[in-house]
Length: 287
Image 1 (cartoon, helix red, strand yellow):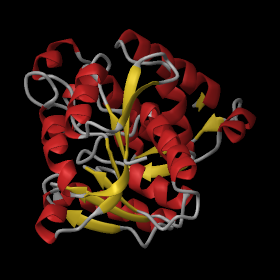
Image 2 (cartoon, one colour):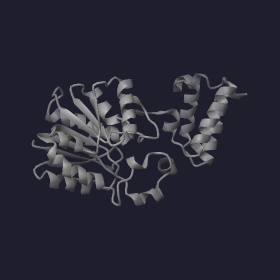
Image 3 (spheres, helix red, strand yellow):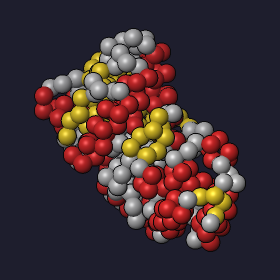
Image 4 (cartoon, one colour):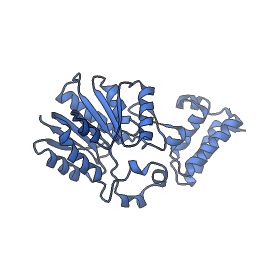
């Protein structure tokens, strides 16, 4: 038999030996026990059932082999909500929460909180941006697009689970569905693939071996999709509009130049994240 705290101690050491983050042990233990952190602490000196212990060990071995914790437990928290994730979608990152937060503030400042705006989340993946924008500002008409039906299925599931049922989902390549229909929008947000292909050699195998490469890599310089988006945006934006991109560290200057070239009169601004990295580029068009 094994007490809860003993299982946690073993798992932390095991993950450390395999060059994995020790904090993952607690997340996987809580998942195995189906308890909150405070409930886990209360149970610290209780014996674990043999079945629970074996299940927990299997999860630890999976993570030690490189599978992301979020894919093991099937979810990740984003903006205070639990989003379902699997191997078909990128795991939402905290930096993207800052894109959402800034977009909400800009919409409020430039249009007013209750403005009935049409917002598109391009390359929605898990739906983290689209669903959060809709739940935080219900007056928005939110449309989420993705090239892959399997990714859209995850986004649809998250919208349903979290009560953002009115989001429209469209399968298509970037902004092409809107151009084809002559549809105009007020806000475009996107966290597209932006990692240069060459960077794969320096990245963690937890990412490169498990997360979908189509959601990570974008050509030799990582700017392929920003270039295409900047070509397409003038065809879909209303006279007054907001554009918000998440970018890779060090890419902001290039992306800002692309946006400025597409919209010479726009106010283009690079925004730094909480860690001081140039992580977002916004354009305010027509204000």
